[in-house]
Image 1 (cartoon, rainbow, N blue to C red):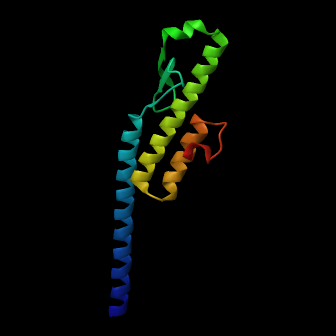
Image 2: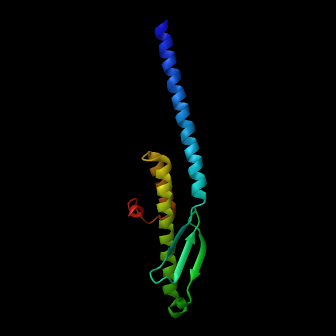
Image 3: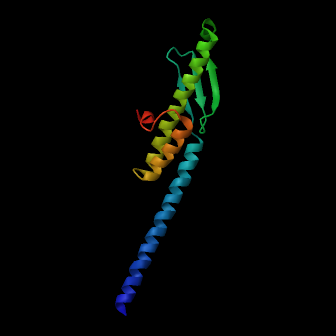
Amino acid sequence: MWADDAVIDAAERRLDEWESSLADRAERAKTLAATMRDLTGTAHNADRTVAVTVDSAGLLVDLRLDERIRQQPAAHTARQVLETTTAARADLLRQVSDAATQSFGDDPSAQAIVDSYRSRLLPDQGPDDARR
């Protein structure tokens, strides 16, 4: 009978540890979600005539154009805006990666979060591009 009690006690301890682990992961996920809601990505082009900020979803929230932009063709400016927006999204992805790693370490959950953001923010780039 005592052997059965020991087995039951061990099972209860494992369940308690599992429950505690789940609660801890849930709290870390909640904290990470709050952190990521406030993230923004920023970038500027080489000659600093274009500056872009994107919100946590990768949407453009600020675009600043220097007056020097008037001296170049509109098509060139448009290309610079698009390239700088992509760079701002890459900056956001780096921040998401840092936050996920800080919250979950090497856990596959962190990589899943980063991969999800990468596919939305930089769909034309493979998994290794955002790590450079």
